[in-house]
Length: 154
Ligand SMILES: Nc1ncnc2c1ncn2[C@@H]1O[C@H](COP(=O)(O)OP(=O)(O)OP(=O)(O)O)[C@@H](O)[C@H]1O
Ligand SMILES: [Mg+2]
Image (cartoon, rainbow, N blue to C red; front, side):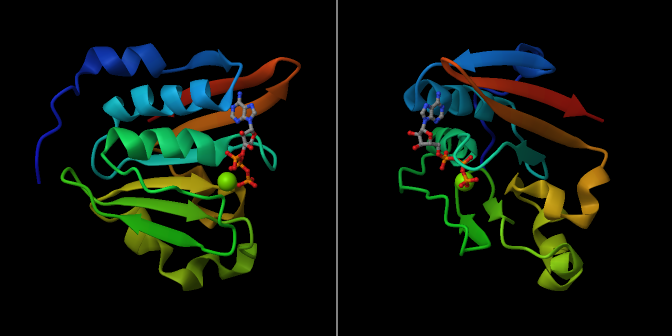
């Protein structure tokens, strides 16, 4: 695995418990791309926000930072997409269709507690919601775009 060039603790403070406002999907993607620089293997990022809030858009930005240009959709019919990067694997989990009671049967542990970075939409479906070490990104509609709150829990 390659070491990421731009990771440093200063970057974390730019995002830790901060709120951002984006007027367009391009700005949301850019924010995701910048945020990605703080991520390291085994990190878990939970996304909260209504349908069409911009969770997948933010995730597209994260993936582009890691060199993945492939279009990522809000593919709610696909539970997990795995992306190989030079740095570490990245898992995109979209749990929209997940019945809360199924969560344990899916081998989701493999992703959450593996070597990769897990990006999880609709994490309220997950039994592990109270996982301690995580990033949480809340996206809300506002009149003029989106409000994006980023929190770090340890
Ligand atoms: N400021 C903005 N940030 C993000 N998306 C925006 C913004 N303004 C408009 N959009 C549009 O909102 C939609 C966001 O879709 P996206 O798939 O990212 O949402 P989602 O939260 O992943 O939804 P789902 O819950 O269905 O997976 C896109 O069509 C995007 O172009
Ligand atoms: Mg989505």
